[in-house]
Image (tube, rainbow, N blue to C red):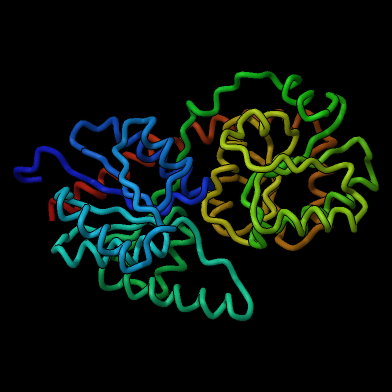
Length: 379
């Protein structure tokens, strides 16, 4: 590191949501803040829960409100902050931040820019697909010419990126979670009571932003099949998003609404996950799901689709089961099999808890990320 006593690192993120990427970023900065040689800051394009969480752990946060600034103003103000604060390295998250951050950094001669790819683009149709394709093309050009290092949160994402970006730029750092944030203040019975769930009901649950890529449509169809075999079931869905309304309407069409609880957005989901007998991830694609890591860490057995980074987290027959995506029949069959085996659920839960604590902690994620920073500055 030469004569640098403190490595000044700035993270650039949107901050408009509280989803997997935001949870991961908070966990990463919490763990990185323990390293004395790192001086951390953040620029966010929206105020909100991410800003609040980062400030709470002592990270200086500068907010440029996106609603009050067009892209050119965002670029100019980002450049001004980077220039005046003299950061050694910029770490960006998502397309818009990659584009504006890397441009701003190069305009002031800032050499070291890295980004994290939290997931692959969601497939769209029509005009949305044209826009998504354009943004993906733009992001690839930025990745090729303006970024020094690209961090993929799964080997699956890294392999996909390697088809269009030099492998020398790519490195995998699996998501990690803040295990301290999974402390429970209420027991299982109290939480179930608050959701009007008796303890004799089996609870299937899922957590995530309600978007088409999460495959909730197929989970609802699978749940309908399950109810035909066992009525003492409830489905608890935690999260919000553009698909929530359509999903609630689809549940009515399937005539299963009274068996489903749409909990909505919950900034801290540990207590709700803890009431689940099985956690289900029905996604059509995933990076490394934070809610999956949290569920395993809480000792909840899982049934997940065999896509994306899921096989990098779950070992089949050890922590849970895999099912193919878009297959409600197989999803229903597998869940029913696991519900019928109390001992297997207990064993899966215990092994899953140990697995996450050993391999997917925020400390492990931060250690690898810190190494990237130091290696870049030492080049």
